[in-house]
Length: 118
Image (cartoon, rainbow, N blue to C red; front, side, top):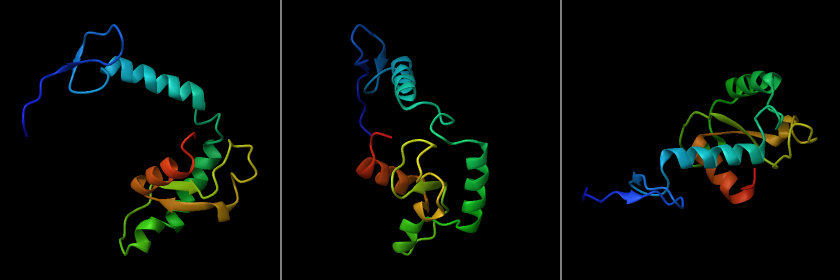
């Protein structure tokens, strides 16, 4: 791989050198701002009862449904809401028909395409 010179952090006023984008401190600030905007997992409805349900659901359905359509057998890591929800009080949060097991890759693709604001 060719050598590339270090660049300055893209945050105005920061002189730290990075390979690309922002330095670690400014990336962390951006993550915190995003977390503050979205709310903590618990505030979004992902309680201890959800974690228990999630574990049971993934035990019953351990493979990613999208990978299975492609003939692949990849373990699911995420219980995805087929119809996007708006927090734990949403009526679509708990019904099992609104859940599907997905691997991280397919969950990221779906989230980016269908519900990028959550």
